[in-house]
Length: 407
Image 1: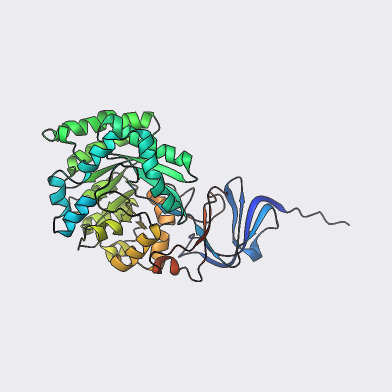
Image 2: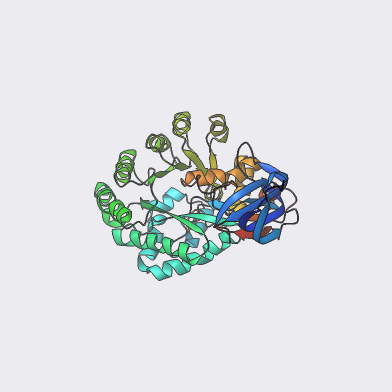
């Protein structure tokens, strides 16, 4: 009796002789002798070579024992903007605070003027070098916020520029409408009228045009009150868009609790987060996105309550917060080092923070952030002996290869 022929499983690409950090399940999901196979841009297998099906790949790559992680995810950036604020950096070195500079007409409003003067092409051209630096470090997904136009037309222009970046580069771009970033000068005497503009025109227009994947706000003494933030959240919900929040960066207005009660994907910064906010985030499953670049650059002293976040089981993400005023950072690897050295995160926490947890902060955890069958095949291949080197080294880039959607 003849035995039935066993057919090999077809795949487009196969990576073998690799060590994997799948980020799936408990911890880093380490596989010492691993294989990743992709078909039609998605992972069909990621795991031990000994358990893998027999594959018939179109292309096979011997990784020579290198590490493979999911492609990195920068889940909080303001990477589309015009101009820079190097002069404000000098003022801070002389002792001026972020709040003092903002109240004197600097800060976000300073970038607003330059961004309003830039057309869409100029915004894309200015952002691409910053995006390229992230891509060169293994980043495959980037969140890009608006928030420097502060008019209907310029906020939509920023979002269109962000969408174009996703077409110009091999990277997934998620866009966030941040109209509630600062109060523009023309609304200085009537802030609620500006909130009306955000709620009644900006959010509906961005949603109708398919330009925004989420809505964000800056809930702070120099930003927007909790009541105004709640109005923005309500408008986002009516438009069918999830929310995020800049919360508790400079003071505690209980924005994190407000965000959690609105089912926010993430609350970001969190230096002044209190126990009430921690518990609200834990109940809601809201991700805590920490931004050590801004903490370092503005020379803040109060750190986010990392121990409380750990104890509550809240997922922690790390991002560059790339922006012209408080975090002109285009290295997610350095952001991880800062998260470890400044906030005392572990290596494991840092790596999960720029993969699995960052994907959750963008609502993308069903598609990316881990090496699992069915996920998009986004990979970073590293020339390191130990994964800790990705967090330990400063100014080093050990990326050997990068794969986006299987290519």
